[in-house]
Length: 474
Ligand SMILES: Cc1ncc(COP(=O)(O)O)c(C=O)c1O
Image 1: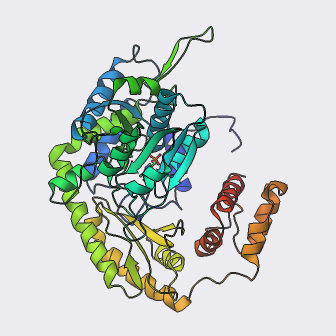
Image 2: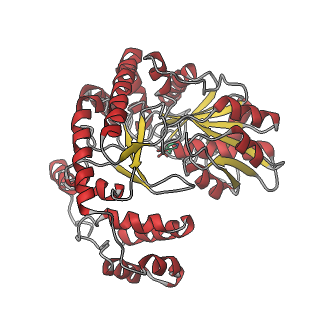
């Protein structure tokens, strides 16, 4: 943007925003099966938006200046603690920040010179990010390849004298299954290590599913050995983005997540989160969503997601050539191809051409490439339409056949010294194999991109992904 000399009116700017959003995926309606959470009740989202805007300019940096922030946070964190076995919490901007704070608290509490944490391979990359930022080494634990759940014995085998944290997910995102939290927390406790439950997805979902009749094992702070837990309100709390809570069983551990600095001549800095200045909008949005829905609203959403997820699992199992992975207890469902003639990445492109986004997941740690669907409140109304699209897209993908890459391409990419390439050269190289990332060239054929990535080892995938982003932002 060239900064204009004179200003514009709000109407002009909003017209421009609408134009910029023209090619975005829709955030409402249920045709985008990841990233967005729709209750199907517009009035709830409207209430959250209004509260968000009302608090937009309030700065959570200084709670003594804005007591509304303290009161709202106490209410929101209190509601999460009430539902999830108590504890002492912090309102954060999302799952990643909640996890970052849990890892920081565990690291600082242990005070090890070479801290490590045990992370099942299906746990969210936020743990790897926290480890990277905080100088903690990750010891991965494999998962059972029939159930996709972590096993306590594998976690136990990965624990060392330097382990400062053990992780379990409820559920893990890729296949929507719940790790055996009780068993994992027990082996952690026996080794004297804290255990964090990543309930970013399940914290504000599983209790309602249980109340609606689902069999949900205990997973929260009431489980012996669980010392902290993350629960995102911007997922199944249906709050606007920027809303999560991290709970600590022990207030002394929560204090380890805080940061204070008096090492400068300016205002005193005391932060509960990674961010310092931050809008109270997300807090107000979450507060308003909880109040607008209430227990009855969440229970009804729980029923709707339970029904929709069951219908989806059964429907997918009936599509020739597709199989659901594992037995998801939550409302996240993933499915893979049952034979080599059907390429799920092609299926995803076919679905996208029909207006539906199904999220591709690359093969990893023995788990095959698959597509992911996050079932939300709105899905029940559209589950038949979604199944029809999946069936049609599967048939079309079989007709098209799997992606075949130019011979030698994977070896070429795997052997690239990316550090030696500048961004324009990388972009040209990508364009020469049909992946044009340059502005205005439209959406690249994602099946090709995913097939290339899928064929690479994780480290090379990461290097290529960083390049994609760098080229995209130009
Ligand atoms: C299980 C789990 N944990 C953590 C996260 C990270 O959450 P966020 O994207 O809010 O940082 C996610 C996001 O999908 C998740 O599924």
